[in-house]
Amino acid sequence: MKQILSFRRPAFVALSCLFAFTLSAAKPVKTLLITGQNNHNWQVSHVVIKQILENSGLFSVDFAVSPEKGKDMSGFILDFSSYQLVILDYNGDAWPEETNRRFLSFVENGGGVVVYHAADNAFSGWEAYNKIIALGGWEGRNEKSGPYVYWQNGRLVKDSSPGVGGSHGKQHTYVLNGRDMSHPITKGLPLKWLHGKDELYDRMRGPGDIANLLYTAYSDKETGGSGREEPLLFTVNYGKARIFHTMLGHAGATVEDNPAMQCAGFQVTLLRGAEWAATGKVKQKVPKDFPAETTASDRKQYK
Ligand SMILES: [Zn+2]
Image (cartoon, rainbow, N blue to C red; front, side, top):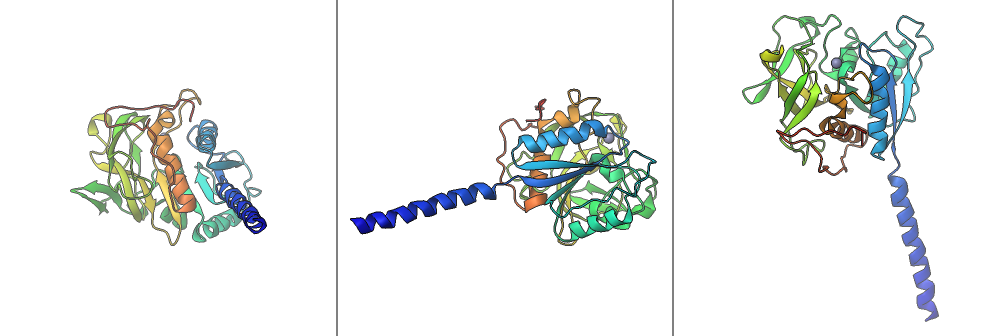
């Protein structure tokens, strides 16, 4: 009897340790969000992205806010070493060379990256950055930046015809069309879903090395678009890096008036893309409030 008791007690302790280990393994993903300059309302977007990520319980988000446009950037030296994930919400003056070098080293050593909306406007002359985003727009981009990349006749085509890189028609609601529903980011999500009122980026150009094309949308000429099926959510092939690019989520006037980012589809794909970029897996369940093809769905409180 004594022997059995003395056997059971250590077994119970071992189980408790296992439980504690499981809890500590679910520590939030340490995330650095870079912002501070943008031709967009970054004052809204960076706060909202932090809310979306932290409300999920899966991430903790720090900000790296750059000096204002035109001010001295030499002190904007970032330390990526304690982060698993970097979110790019920046479109502005060049970072110091040291920050560029550290960012590339972070990416090349397997750090996760989320490219969010107008971050793909940034740094049109920085070759490595353009490989990381795969497709970009504006800031002088043209045929020298790389081909147009779009979905046509059931496949992704690269079109090197001349012309501007990057435009969009008027904001409207539109349907996202799934192109790879077996990727961890998209698995279990609907093939088609209605996005909240947003810009639809079109005619983007760049090296275009898309690894997994996840969703496209039709950019209708009626709304000022390209008449093409444009890639809007995808992962990027860049060494061993895990990069998720979402062109959705044009920031609104205020945190409360922000239809593109208040869309549950934007938030859930951002969360799944961020988890995959950081860990290579997606453990989040598909929520019941995800939009359907004809039914939009909002999370106005970002949770
Ligand atoms: Zn925008």
